[in-house]
Length: 253
Image (cartoon, rainbow, N blue to C red; front, side, top):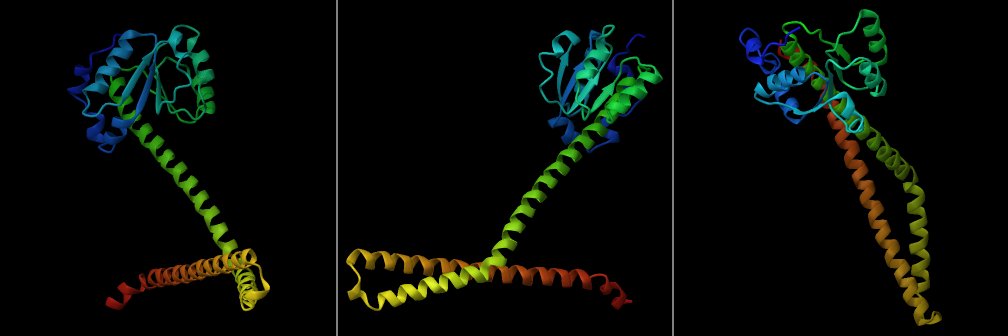
């Protein structure tokens, strides 16, 4: 079919940003790869995207050049019409988690097979309004990509926090044992320092260092205990506020 110009579509259809205003920051920072062997397809889609207020970064590649760039990550891949046999070859090498919009002709059996391998694949038929449909679908896909990225970051942060929590629990459990060991070190060092005449000058200096460092470690452990108590108090206060909040409206009735 003959591809219309971007201006012919914009007259009767709202832009992607007007329908999905949240797509602006996503589009501005997104990276989109257009894979096609049809020059008009790439030219028209690129022109429509660039007509928006905030266009993504767009890379256009033909099937022959794609292998040199397949390792470069993109937020979204748009596959347009390709030469015979190239579609299966390219899709075979894409990662299953790729956000993918397919604008190439495909029968229902092939689409079902592709959707089984690529859960994030969306097929946009090359009808008269395909460019605007694609822009809307792309905005939704980029939002999902951003949500997944944020979720992965949150999971990674939660894992790190859990590691810190495990370390903190271990330190809390060992606090009593460490304090006992420090008390013994400080006490024995002080006993030796009570009779300095029995020690050489070098030994006396070493025991003073041990005594000083043990006192310093004791101060650190005391501060750790104080912080643990402050955190428990803050947690208890927060929990109390949370439990009281639902009861507040009922008292006003």
